[in-house]
Length: 374
Image (cartoon, rainbow, N blue to C red; front, top):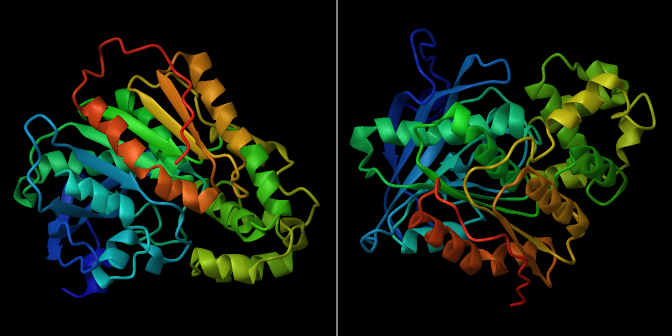
């Protein structure tokens, strides 16, 4: 079976459950020194209408044997890579082109299985990627990946506690997965969630991106949300040039998006503020964080000098989760968006290691504000 066939071959979507494994194949992850093996998998998930869809991922088996009581399955959701199919982590890791590997290597070194979903629209998806739609399209494939590992007995994955981790848009997906898990995937033994550089209020973040250096990200967000919420046609908000650009954007990486679309988002739109109509405001409200209390501990962190997702956005997420009664802690670093992603890795793994040894249903310590400076 060719690479294309592995991802695109039809799968039966009748009489299937979310989390069912459809097909697997072993691959080599040349960049990772700590992986004893790797599997690309195609499995069943659901879309924003709760209809079954094909999803894909890569599962990395650690070379290290964990100490007793410390083994885990890490659901890792990387930052936004782009809207196009070539941005799927399961393909990038198999070809040696993935740049976000430091945290993955550190988790493998602890003896953790690392499972990385491609996200809706990438890999087995038909594109474009559903960027910014964490609640409608991102969190369910993440949780269904854990189900797939539980059911895929031939993948050499031991039954173990699950922890979730993501950064930026990946952090939003991990945080929402923590919210959805009790009712969507109660059988998944989730113990803790770590999320860095997240924004609770997507409407505020979208407006900031649309006017600044991240205008290409705002354009990608418009495309990604319209893909997830297919009752929102882009023709409502984009002008003719914008519609042509959106078709092109669906094939681009994040670097290409930033280079191709430096203009303010309004340049491509019919109105100065494309988000300001009742349908798009409703979608942005649906995609906020902290809709409900997260049962497991939540670890939020942010860079004080982050120019992409301002630190005040992360602080608002902290407040919103605390108001819901979530056990949440906070760490702030004297770094920007990219440096914080690396500086936080040891702290994140230490906190998730503590969660693995804890009962998620038991009462935890009181919330704590902690500031860490490398």
